[in-house]
Structure formats: C-alpha cells, structure tokens
Length: 342
Image (cartoon, rainbow, N blue to C red):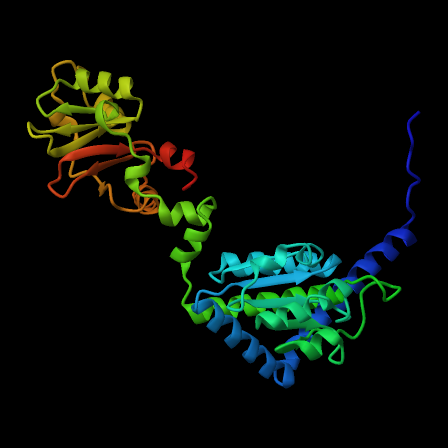
C-alpha cells in the first residue's frame, strides 16, 4: 500500500521558511559576534594560539584536535582544514585516547580541545596526562570558568548568545562559531607560512587545482608512432591518410631531422578543397600552415590548455617540440579533458 504524505498548506510552508531564515540569522550573528570580539581579549588569545600553533609545527610538532559528540565532528573538520592548508594536524577521539591513542601525542605537539561546556568528561580526564607530557593545550569552549578553559595554555572563548535550536539545547550556533574560528586559525597560519597554490596542489593531487598545477605536457602528450607526421615532400593525399590513421585532426610536417616545419589540419584541408579542384598532385608543403603554435614538454598542461583556447586550435591540437624545434609529441584538447585539466 502506498503512503501519500499530507499536503502542506501555505501557513506550514511560511513557518518552515521562517524557521530556516531565523536559524541562518542566529548562526550568522554568532559568527559576526566572534569577529567583533577579536578587538578585545579574544583577539590577544587568538594571537597567542596562532603563535603557539605556528611555533610548534615549525619545529616539527603536530596539531592534535579532539572533541566529543558534535564538537568532535567540528574538530575533525578543523583538523582536516589545518592539514590541507599546510599545518600538520589530525583528529584524535577522546574516548579512544584513554585506551592507547594518547601514545600518538608527544610533548612537541599541541592539542586543540573542543567542548562547549568545557566539562566533557572524556576530555577533562585527558588533562592530567597531557600536563604530565608537557603538551600545550588550546581550549575552545563556551565557558571561561570551566575546568578545560582553566587548565588550558590558551583559551578561545566560543560562547554564543543563543543556539538556533528553538529549545536552545541542540548545538547549532555554537558549533558554527567554533568551526568558523577554527577556519580563521587555519587561514592565519596559511598566510604566516606563505602557503600558496603550488603547496595547496601538493596537498590535493587528486583535485582539479592539483591537476592544473602538477600535471605537465609530458604527462598527457602522445609520443612515438602515435604522433602524426609526414615529410615536407609528401603528397597531400599521404598527409590526409596520416591524419585519418592517427585521429588527432592534424599532422605535423617535418624535415629530414624531424625539425618541425609546419602543420596540416582539418581546417587546412577544408580551405584546400575550396581552392583546388584536384589535390592529387599537391605536396603537403604547398598548403600547410607554417610556424604552427607549439609548446615544450616541460610546460604545465594548464599552459597548453591556455594556448589551445587562446588561439582557438582545439580541433587541431598542439605540437610538442624540444629546444631545437624537433618534434617530440602532440597534444589534443581531448587529452587534456581526459586528464581533468579542462
């Protein structure tokens, strides 16, 4: 038997959207309030936390983020953001820490402990062990008088005026504020390290930015017998056969030492057919495009894509030469698309 959901009337819809807007406003206000508090005591504590994190990780230490429940989920995201932007970090579940995972932490590390109340039992129990190791602790809590905030090396106050939950119980605005402050730390550390696009790509080799900044022409070009080429004295019909056989929409025209002299493309073929009634006696050198656009194998694949797009040669692709202008490969726009560069 199928179950048909009751239709919602207009007033139900308006109430739903009103609650959604109110939630977003409350959470946005919580983040704005944190930004304003950076001009006060929170600002100095943020600077202290930033310096501690920077100094520890510059000396080969790591950032260990921990938190229970929803604070743990926020902590996992903060650790991930730190790691992906150049600050060595990982998440440690506080419940597992007392069963052996504390062995992952050394005195050279720094712990970011997240608890809105500052009294999470699993985290409070870790404090004596962390103190014994001499490990610095940055506490992110909503209460400055809590056990965790008092024991911390640095306390970052993430208190909010109210939660977005109508019952003011479920962590909503508080978790958003904590996450935003964690992002602020990550961005500040990124800037302090001079962490740029290339470093980001090294941390994200599987992403689109990684492909753009790490992949070279040599990684995607075709080489050897797959490169379409004919000698300058070849008949045009032979050049057409070479183009058809290799399937790149063009063929290179080379001299005796494989030096590149020109290119004959699908576009050249159309223009030749329009201008000549009989092409059987033509040499490819009579109708080729001299001085074609080229690139070297050591260039980034993204640079090849830019050349192809700028000169509108997507249908014929790009020839790859060495420093002596000798043909070493060919690159088609489809190769770049398959590699995820385009």
